[in-house]
Length: 155
Image 1 (cartoon, rainbow, N blue to C red):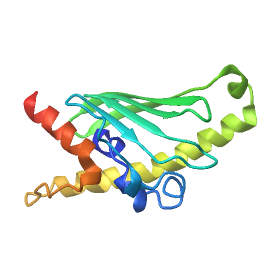
Image 2 (cartoon, one colour):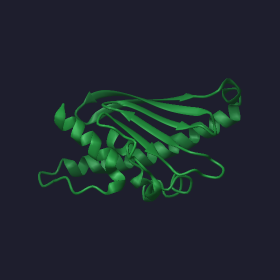
Image 3 (cartoon, helix red, strand yellow):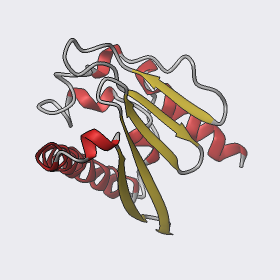
Image 4 (tube, rainbow, N blue to C red):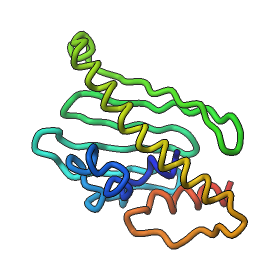
């Protein structure tokens, strides 16, 4: 989940109909990241604004959309080597939170996006269980994944 969250390269396939039209995975920049965190910048969308993705290792994840005035916090609790409990907490300005229809739309959108992510993460985990699994080379668009792996190796 942390690796998936810390790169947007997968928007191209996994989120082709949801996130890719707004924040194309091939146009992200993780150069502001450091050894213990990911600062992933997305291009500005004319209507949706920007999307900032922030990860502080090992498990602090935020998605920030300043144009909407919202932040989504992903509270992860490890349950074992391959399982987590995920609580998604939306943080909105009071006037936005008071709009029940808008909140229902945001909730449905987040649910759809995370259903896409869960399917992809499950396939990755299944592949990693293979005795022949090896980690392949990473794209420059997966710089956040590389930083996380370096952090894990050093911990």
